[in-house]
Amino acid sequence: AQSVTQPDIHITVSEGASLELRCNYSYGATPYLFWYVQSPGQGLQLLLKYFSGDTLVQGIKGFEAEFKRSQSSFNLRKPSVHWSDAAEYFCAVGRTDSWGKLQFGAGTQVVVTP
Amino acid sequence: EPEVTQTPSHQVTQMGQEVILRCVPISNHLYFYWYRQILGQKVEFLVSFYNNEISEKSEIFDDQFSVERPDGSNFTLKIRSTKLEDSAMYFCASSTGLAVIGSEQFFGPGTRLTVL
Image (cartoon, rainbow over all chains, first blue to last red; front, side, top):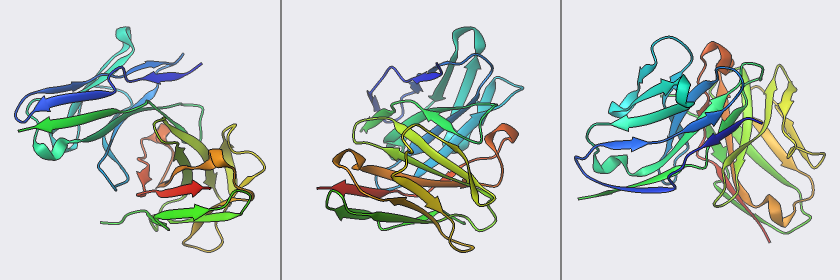
């Protein structure tokens, strides 16, 4: 069965430090992969997406993610976090045989300290 | 910038009552979705809707649930007889096309449903 795993429930990072959020998926074919961010009281905002082509994807707010087929991973990175990056981050998978259904991971809560 | 809006932001209801959650998708979007997130759990897909009919639904979306696009702007989720386990944050989303062709789903801020 298809699944999305975010191993880290909670990450604390200092402002200015680098950030990496992990995402692993289980799916028979190449999935479509997404990272969303949710700030308190806000909806889910798309940071970036991978469909095909270059496995290093650039997104908004200085985020990037790398698709590694051999590891079934799509990890999100940011070289230098800002206090405004404190939020919950969700990895999601879309299927090629679906009418748009996204399957989400459990989310990673990011706390940024001064 | 266009956005998906949802009303109300918080709904409290008694078990067994009917609730209608409302969404206004982005105006030129053609595909509409409902997701929910029970506190502490994953965001789960409920249903997708296109061309005035359900295109896909999950196991969660049983006979107690229905969706409707009553006019050109609103998209509603109705729960006929709420249960305690329906308490969750419900997200509406919309897109111009399917994810398979690269379309992004835009999410609303959610409606928190509390069933007492």
